[in-house]
Amino acid sequence: MPLIPLQHEDITLGVPLPWDITDSESKVIFERGRVLDNQPMLDQLIKLGLFRIAPEARNEAGQGKQGERMTTSMTQIQLAPGDLVQLQTLNSNQTERYQVKMIGFHAPVSLLVTAPTNAGKLAFVREGQQFLVRGFVGKDAVAYKTRVLKTNLSPFPYIHLAYPESVQSMRIRSSARVSLELITAVNRSGKQIASAKMVDLSVGGAKVLSNAVFAELDDEVELAFRINPAGLDVYLKIASKVRMVNTDEHSGKVATGVEFIDLSEQNRLYLTNMVYQNMLKDSL
Image (cartoon, rainbow, N blue to C red; front, side, top):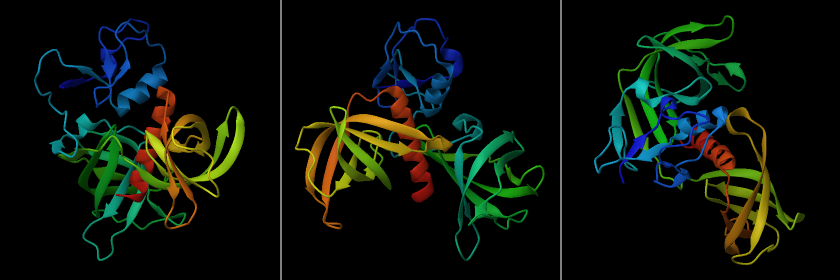
């Protein structure tokens, strides 16, 4: 179903929506006639990707299919200050990867990012050094090649990267999962019934390991855990339905797979940021 991406100017706070707003999978997030009044939340959701259904059956520019690679411009991908990106060294005998933050950009000259560090110390970066930059914007993985224009230590360490002529992007699957380790409390009826370790997370569900069985198939429980998306310390309590119970072949513990239910848009936003943040850190 053809979708039209929405920008800030398309949505007016305090005014009923003229159409349904969907995500990239055509799932309705806000129905027609609803009044939005939370600007910070709207800003975050637009960054992740909001759409409306096209009035006619035609492909919209920049709306890629899952797994399809596209070439676009830097101005179209909307990387924002504070976004995490990864620098990977090029033309080197040993590939090194650094996680840095976007500070800003001055098109078409340069991008400003925090200086890369290694074990808490500034990494050596020379002017002219080439990097592959990778990151996530909404549900798209983006990558582009660049070089260091200038390094600065004052008023804090940062570097200027050459503004890219083009950017490669690819739509990632909506069920993207990451491996992690999060201490998780399992609750039922407001009381904790088990302690577990979350080892797999997606926006739609999770896999947890425990010493003993705490629920049967289709039972509903609440998972409580702490995450740190984009530098925020967030404690989530998410209603879940058990979809799988078996024995983990590596640890010998009970593995329970759950599906998140009745997920609020706020929690969906936090989980999406967490998943993409870990994909950037561990997979790219």
